[in-house]
Image 1 (cartoon, helix red, strand yellow):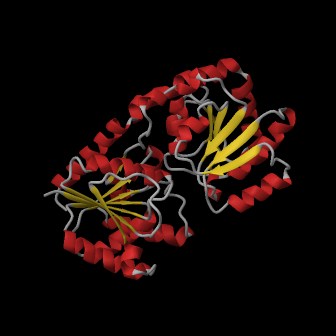
Image 2 (image 1 turned 45 degrees about the vertical axis):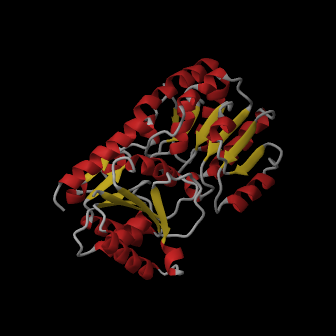
Image 3 (image 1 turned 30 degrees about the vertical axis):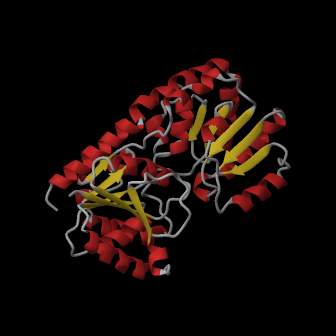
Length: 359
């Protein structure tokens, strides 16, 4: 009997969580048992296949104590004896590896962000890097991120891109609907995403083009800060923060431009989706974006943190119709490469290979 335990921080709205929600149903077709273990008790945002069992450690132990969580997970895996454990995000993966020391269990850790950055700074990065020595395998989303690791860790690191979660009828749809004077972005309202840069750039753009709006979909700890910035720049009537949405494709398909202003990324789902929709897309030169975008061919790349480059890119994408149409036509070609079925097959093949190898 082949069994899989997927470990994650939570299943709230986010890129890693979305990947888990889709891949877990694919895994259920190839494993006799699939269980998701969340280290944090939080509402489940995405629909999870009914064949997949979900457990919250905090709910089980009625505590947020990290050591107690590690001990509970160790006991849980001893009872369930999974064929393999797949852990997403460093905060989950560190606990998983600590819980499995001495058990000779196969543990795959899946990084979902640029490994050069981690909440907790250098001490947390050092702990993660040391513990990943004990992982069976490491999965990254880009070649750039793969080569962060050195020596033995590099030799057991593989790359699997994020899939695009999109019904085929949405592919290229932005080419077939009238474009509104609305610039959009999608992402957690967190410092990493640097929506502050986008708002500042839009403020300058808006002075010359007062009939344009900016909408940023997402939720997070920076909401109050961003709302205050919008108020100070007197943009309340043209910049909107509507929060999370379950029908994001319909909400953004008629935008004149999409912007990813992040300081760093793993493989940005929102950018993948906007490009497959056919929205002219601009991104900072973060990991993932530099893998996806061929500059001036299917998107525009700008330097991280550059307000002037972002303003210039917005003006070109919106007002240069030839460029805009070129980007819109070429970007959806990503869909075939990143379709769920294609990417899921890479995951299944990878896990199957790991199961055949000795721990």
